[in-house]
Image (cartoon, rainbow, N blue to C red; front, side, top):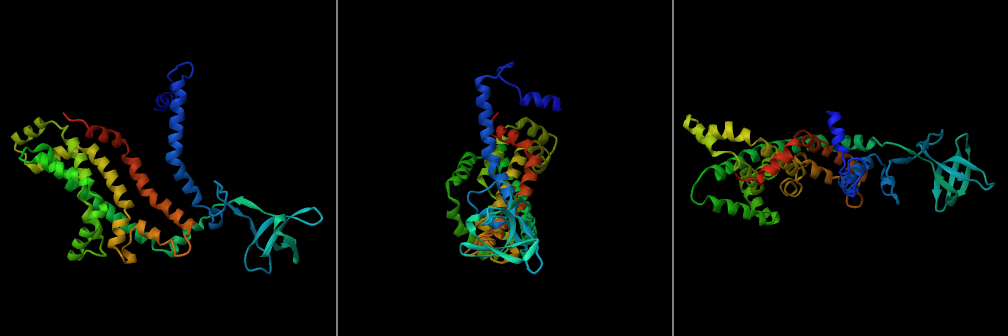
Length: 352
């Protein structure tokens, strides 16, 4: 397999020498890769930085931190600095305290003597350091695993119900002939023009009447019917030959059996694409859970991440670290199902 993939990736239009279109293609692909994956890589690397390093300008790509040393007589590690002394010599000293533009330093070999130096004569000693505390402390301080569990429950149940409900609607709108079918489909597509914010209040009033406020059911049910999902599945099911369904009916198969054992297996690429979209929608949904849920034990991950934002300060290092953990399930699902994306989306626009 590698002996076929590598020549394919590095093939050129000019064969023996690079053509102008080869340079343009590689430039376009490189630029697209940087624009797509650059922010993700930056966020992942920044999740190992300290709060001070994140607020530093100009920013650094790698997670550097000040070197520290423990000196007897001090209850905390002291930051190390390169200090230019009055005699012109340079020494590595530990900063004890800073008052205005003057700082006091201690020599680790002679900690009893304090040296006063102007801050302009100092430069912090920095080293590449991964702040694993950014991942450990939030897991101890916040109910992240509770948020994670709630998100998994909402995502799995909402995706399964979405696939079932919308596939039934798509099956009826693609394989049954009845009066008003095209009108129903047109009205379904027209609902895409209605902003989500318009339906927030009616949906909230309905789930309030049903007693689903502060319940995961109230987050799951209102979003399962999706016109986008119906359109995606219907367009794919139109490509399935009607003769196959008619043959199954002649053999005595019920409509439910035709749907479950013929249509669903043959529509697997489109269903896989819809599953990826649905998982992404439900996992990252913020606005609707924020309206429905007010109890912390019911929060999903997007709302839980909001807890790292205080009134006066945002703990960016914890927010980035937990965001990286929140991305892992989506990344794994995409990795397993990505082979269906091209096939599923390409086939939805083909009508036989």
